[in-house]
Length: 145
Image 1 (cartoon, rainbow, N blue to C red):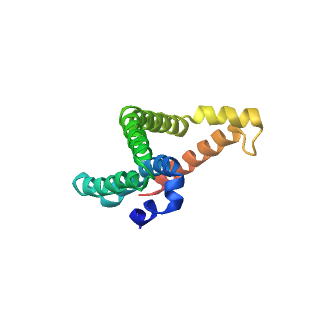
Image 2 (cartoon, rainbow, N blue to C red; image 1 turned 135 degrees about the vertical axis):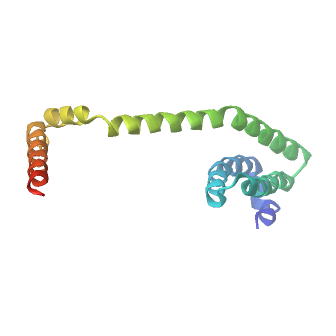
Image 3 (cartoon, one colour; image 1 turned 30 degrees about the vertical axis):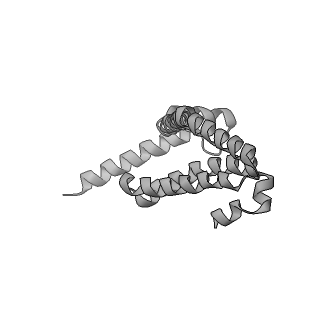
């Protein structure tokens, strides 16, 4: 289906924009493929097939200069993607994971936020409720033989 689209007049009129768009669309598609098959040895042929189809898309150019322009733009995007985008996405993922962990483990932070914002539950009632729940558990354990 994509091969047929690349040979259409609509594609050849805006070939560079489509080539750039398809290259950036392949980033999430590679992620979906890797999660779907859950095995690197199965994902590589699928990803390679998609990349070959994208490369064949440059054949839909109107003339040789458009073909060369599309080829080199695709080459530059591939180099930039391999050098920088992988590092940037990994960095963003690790930072977001650390922020999520920090937020989940900082009860004192959320108690301060509740005090400052005047939330419905105040920190003092939280500590009293937790203390009374602990006392009830202790009494229940003592009552059992």
